[in-house]
Length: 140
Image (cartoon, rainbow, N blue to C red):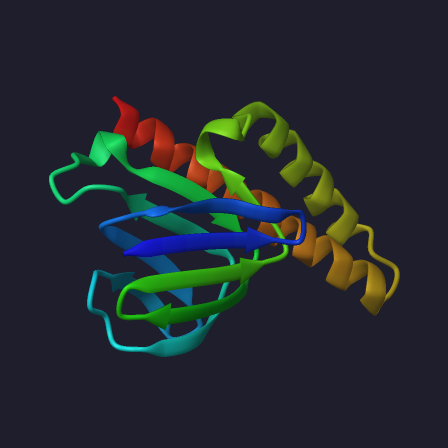
């Protein structure tokens, strides 16, 4: 089946895949060829891609997303998100530092707008760290 991962910057991924795991508002779902048609809300988390049926876990690809929309057809998945960071592009030390900074922003927030902004940054960097950890764990 075809997977399209589309961000505000354009198409991040447009390729054939065997399996995709997507974090949705109703919980994580696994999508295989022939899946029922579905439109859902994607929530912050990791999209996990298995390109071929026999691929081992160390060949999985990971993308950190902040949420968006998922459109599933039996032979096509389209994921529309603001941004998607490929696991191999995430620098864990930078994400840890950014998370610590976001936590400090939340602690020092003076109003609801600052609190909301800090919370969104915390979510983003926590997801990025989780994806980096998943990638590291499965590459061993």
